[in-house]
Image (cartoon, rainbow, N blue to C red; front, side, top):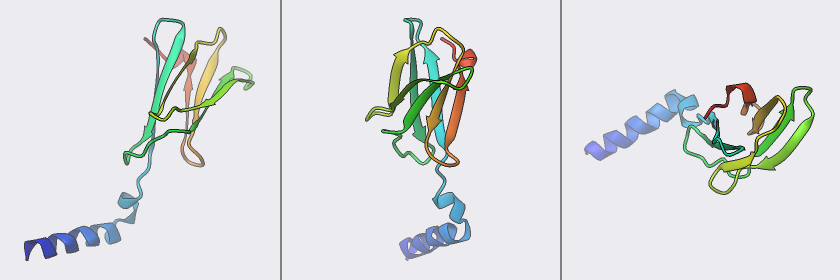
Length: 106
C-alpha cells in the first residue's frame, strides 16, 4: 500500500515540476597540472556522460588552436598553449562553457 502511494507521489513530482526531470546542466573544469599540459573533465548534472563533447581551444583573437573531444571517460589532456587562450566545452545550445586560461590553476 505504501509503495503505491510512493509511486503516485514520484509521478506527481515529475508532472508538477517537469524541469526537475530534465535538468541537464553542463559541468566542466580544467587544471594546469604543472607538466606543460592542461587536464579537463566534464559531465552533466544529471550524471550523463560528456564523452564525445567537442572541446575547442582558442587564442585571444578567437582563432582555433586545437579542436578535439572528451574521451570515453569524459576527460582530455592537451599541451598548454604559449599564448592567452580559452577552453570551450561545446555541449550544444545552452550547454557551452568557456574557461579562460587565466583562470586555470595548478
